[in-house]
Length: 179
Image (tube, rainbow, N blue to C red; front, side, top):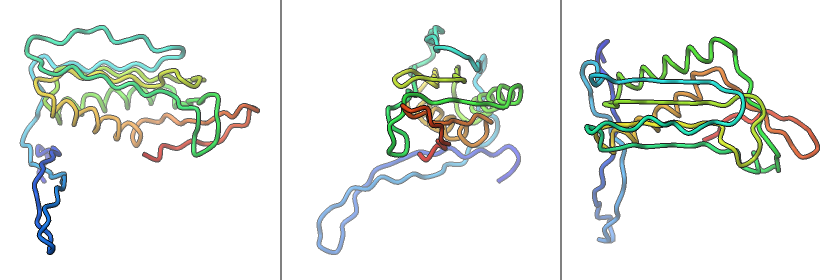
């Protein structure tokens, strides 16, 4: 793959006939080559790392956007099968914001997305509250959904933010992302 080639996943459905003659539907993910920079004119990436509750993103999609997608990641009441009361998010101050912004800009280059906004909360986040909010505006649903999924997957690998689960008795244990 050259320096300006990008891969873009997509899915399609089709039927297979197995030896017993019964049709079986499968979903496959394929990779389609993308050449050059996918950045749409006027594309914007906005990222924030905040302490305290996340406020909703208020930017409206343009008339060219057919999809306005929002993902909110909330703290569950269990982590790795154990009851918890909160997650503590720690981060590499300075570097986490730089990496988060770079990732958002990479997403704009990789997918035809007009706007990507991400807010990640750090510090103590109680059960039921949002730790992550990602909003994507794009001309089409499929590319917007793919962009959100790729962005979140990469965020977990690239951005130096770590989470610790806190139990009702105050014990803390590492809570690495397993999904």
